[in-house]
Image 1 (cartoon, rainbow, N blue to C red):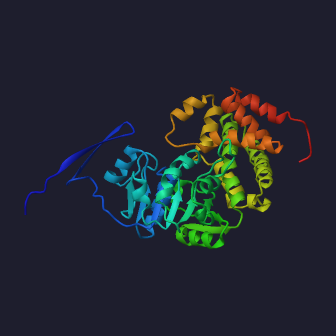
Image 2: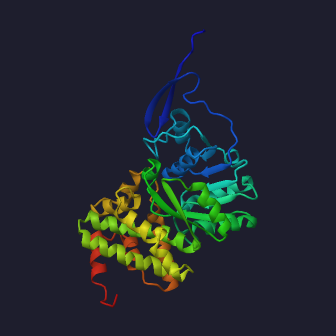
Image 3: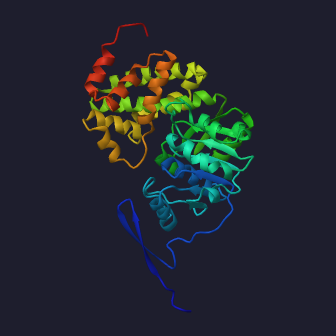
Length: 364
């Protein structure tokens, strides 16, 4: 038997040097056919790609960042966005949209909401004409006030509009990736599409419910991020549990008023994608938006906070869109207004709290 030759592969990823020893490459990449494509390799995109890959069958994961692609290829782990989680051998990363989407009957949009329009304008020609689309992004586009599904409906061919669904609910990527129990909702205009997505994602660890209210599911998922920033500010100022409970409760009212005005069903905001997601992100330390708020409450600047974060806190940009949307609808959104003032107008967190507590007295 001839002597097997080894080489050291040096990876420069996110400022780290990683040495991997293997035969020709640290991890052999296979050319495979996969009927699932996940576009976006952040923490949630990677988690769901791995979740689906563990169910069996191939999953292609489109990765924008070269260093992240190398990490997954060579180490079998997304150390930048999902450290400590070994990824399935059925998951195949690529930086080519055409390669990722070739033959995919299920396409998951996992890029940040502000990047959907640009990425899917490029991806559109490669999407199969009968593919099922699942959006897992949470945000409102500035200017257009469109949700993620609304953006996709503008960018993708009209024939795909009824194939678009959204998946949302209380689900931290780190916990789902460790197979801890979670429950989420899938909504679509076409119930058959929602049923297909439900079956595709459901496991003993992840329970998926069908919801008929796509507007409500998306507004609940997007607007709760703004409330999470407010909750984090409250905790950063050490205002106590009473204050946080009040913020969550009044935040739910604010979110539901805006959502209902846009056509959502009131009851949706009492479900997983509404109250469930709101409670999680307003209290869980794994929430990026809560973390931004808490650091603001401690006195750090927004630039300092965002500069130290690898992942996107959707609520920062969404807050401006929500504020402008509420104003255009003539709806009072005092929490959102104060969050925007702290984020962008140099108002101190203490001043924002005082403004909320001294507003005109009224009935609940």
